[in-house]
Image (cartoon, rainbow, N blue to C red):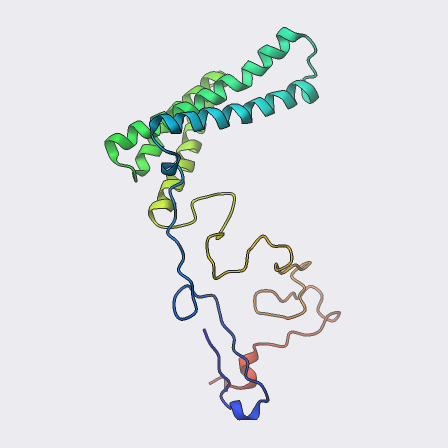
Length: 220
């Protein structure tokens, strides 16, 4: 949105307000959402990726548990505790990736149901690991939701990650840059806007100036 004053000759300077838009003059194209799982490589590459990262994650968790939580000192107990975490988590990740790839071979690479079906493997492993059938069912539903949300977001060209948001839009200032973000306590800001102005501290801070367009346009 571009705003031009109704009577520009009465103003010494013309101010242009540009809203959040994704198309039009001056806008850089936003690249299509990338299916990063497919970019890993072939079937073997994906299994190696899942095995490597899940083992490193589970190994780190196991070491912290052995050193700081359980505080085990006997070597056999440490090895058993290490295997208790690394084996099921690694098998679950590799099984999930393998199950998803198997489902994609029948249903297609963009299939949401392939992710939902592949979630049965890590969910079943978790149920056996925790010795509780109901936990296996709930974890299967959780993994299915995560995988289906990822594939649906990829197919619909949405942001397909739960960790970062809108990082590939070149038209938006980096949302995680601490020097460009708008920080406020209880939505108290120097410039009051319709969504940011706080009514908690009325009487202490300056009153809401209202929309700027009212200075130049008739409400009717």
